[in-house]
Image (cartoon, rainbow, N blue to C red):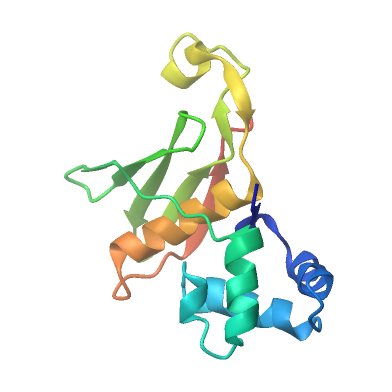
Length: 160
């Protein structure tokens, strides 16, 4: 199984690069490509040698989420439904309010609380999301809204 680079911190990316026989700065380069440039394909990392890009394809992946459903209410609030690799799904909610754009992201599949008024609570708890699944919600919504709008706040949901 290939390692998901979106699950790694900067320090872990540096160590990962070193484990491939590269210097630590290659990990920082990869991080810039993934998070600042938004690339999901190693071939787009043009300042990284072809041999390393080939090696990255063999041992790593850059995961992403794509919404299967987006619902927008009259007040501009948008709900994004994301399928996960294990068949579960999570929601993120984008809320515009007084010049701010707040994104509420999921951190878990389901909830342990079991509140009768909440569908998620009634479904029970399945698991915590990986770091990559959490980060990918932000990146997917950012991609969906385009460069004209900027997320100003991120709120974590699902810690009941």
